Amino acid sequence: MKLQANKIVGKDWLQYQPYDTTNAVDHYYISLCNKVYQILRDSEIGSYLNDVKAEKSLACLLVSYFVDVISETRLFSTFTKLHEKMYGKKLPFYEIPDDYYDDEINKEDILFLIWYHISVNNYDRLFDPCFVEDKESITDTMSQIYKLFEKDFEEAPANERLQDFLYFSSGNDVKIVRDKLKWVAERSLWWNSLYSTFIRKALDKYMVNGVVVLKDEDDNKKIYDQQTEYLFNEYLPLLAMRTNEYFAELLGDKHPDYQLFKKLSKRKFGSFLLRKIEKNGYLIEHLTSKKQIFLSNEFTSFDGLQLVENETVLSLGIVQWNDDVWQQQGICMIHSFDELKGKDFYPHLFDDENLKKKIVENLEKAFLEISGNKRLMYVRGKREYAELLLQVYRKYTTLLNTSITEKVLDEEYKGFIERTEKQVPFEKHTPICVYFNPKGGIESYFDEVTLSMRDENNPYYKHQYFDICDLVMDDSMSTEFINHIIQNDLINLEIVGFEDTNMMDIMLDNLDFWLRFYRKEKYFSKSEVSIQS
Image (cartoon, rainbow, N blue to C red):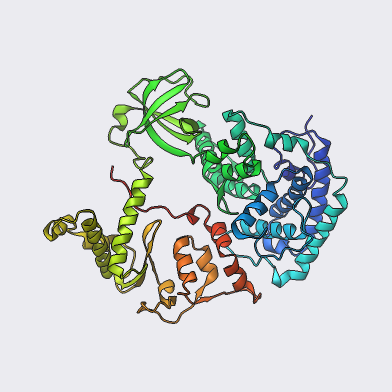
């Protein structure tokens, strides 16, 4: 008999559990959730969320933190451990008092969780983590919740089933590994609100009069594939980590599953020619790169399908499980080789990253030689920008081939300026800041950024100021560019809309944390060059 979730936050709380539950432990925590929810309802926090469901979710999040500490499951302390390793302190923003203990409830943790939940539910805004405008009210709310937890700390039951679920060895079983990741990515205290937002957006186009209507099996497959993509590829705002990476750190490097989870690749989706059907799987070959991989049959969806060696093409999602074995994750579509011959829609799936890195390194040499060893150059309008790119690419080509003639270069880059002018989004007289990112390649920034750059080499500097919140939240700017201009004091910064006079310092002191939080995957710059197929 299932637990009757008829309390105010009962159903919300059960969303955080990795199993169908009949346990009295959950009765206890549903009651605690309702008490926390009532405290939240009587506070100013609702004005930050403007959504009753988000308030219920916050109550569940805070109680999940309490259960996590009581049960020693370490979902929260894994974050503080990683944050301390990266930044030398357990939490961003706050001074950590002497009576802060990893294995107990802490006021600073509760305040941070409130800020985190508000932020992920309002991802287009940046919130003061010290809540200066409502400091007294928020602090009082936090204190009430802390006292409630402190009162229950000694008598609250540990969730031993959750402990067992998380920490027993998977034995490399694909289903068990996936179940663990699925719970962490969809239901755990850090990801639950994120997943709720994701699935709401994913299902939005299937809504009819407020009800989700999936018309056929194809709709189900599309939703399933999006969920699988989320499971393996989504980055957590905290520290920009994927689910498997965070879970590996939760287990610790002494756990037998640590390396398995740590090394799980991102999910790739591509088209592969079936080369050979073997006892335990399939030898498949990527259509463009001709890379061959072994796909285990442990988790495939090929039952009932007619597979023909050297004829069947599988378009499917795959995850690298270890050095030699890949697993299907997500949907699979079947084609004939003739149907897709010369039409691979995923040609760069296995681009040689080392080769791309080498191309960027050589482009960097060319750029620095032209710029006089500076990472920033300034031009006006699309014509000058195209001419600068042409200089860089011509220099790049001569670095690779010192014997190439000007005549050959002219022929190779014939029409380059005209083509580039058509492609770039700049107006005719736009001042442009051109930056060479050692990890990504050439980047360009314009408008307010360029006008605010007090670089002595910038002829377009207009003594303007740029809002640091926009700098942090605009993920079109690379991490390397932001670090370069701030570390070298090249931009005039201001902060708009905050009463806290210390907010600028908080932003700068925790800059890398903010960048990871608002960029997630885009925090990590990738090479913008492509290997010719």
